[in-house]
Length: 200
Figure 1: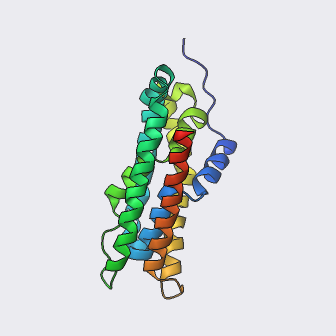
Figure 2: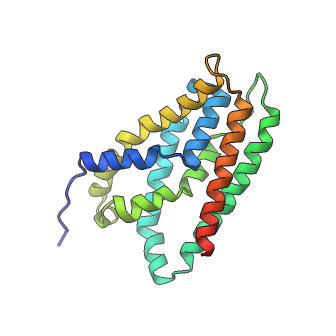
C-alpha cells in the first residue's frame, strides 16, 4: 500500500531557499561565472544547476543512501572523492585567473558546474532529510518535490551570478581575477572541510 504523501509547503520552500542561498561550491562557481562572463552568458548555468541537483538527490536517494547503510565506508569515500574534485577545481580556477582578458576564458563552464553540483553535500541533505522516502519510489512524488525545489533554486542561482557580475562590472570595483581567486579559496575551504569530515 502506498504511503500518504503530504505536498511540499511554504516551510519546505523556505528551508530549501535558506540552504541553497548559503555560500557553497556551486554558488562560488556561479559567482565566478558572472564575474568572468557576465549575466547574459551565464544564464545557461541556471537550469544546469537545477538538473544536476535533482540528479544528485535522486542518485543519493535511490542508490547511495541504501548502499551506505549496507556498507558504511562508502560514505567517507564519497566525501573524499568530493573533496579531491573540489580541490582540483579550486587549483584550476586559481590558475585560470591569469588568463582572463577582454575575451573571458571558459574556466567556469557547464561541465565544471555540473560536476561540482553533483558532488555538492547539499544534495545529500535534501536526499536524506528534505525529500520524503516516497520520492524515490513514486515518480509523481519526486516530480512534486522537484517543482517545489525549483521555486527557490532558480532565482537563487541567478542571484549568485548577478553578485559576481555586479562586483566585476563597471559598477563594481572588484576585477574578475579577484572574484575567481575568491571562489578558488572558497572551494579550497569546502574541500578541506569535507575531507576532514571524511577522515574523522
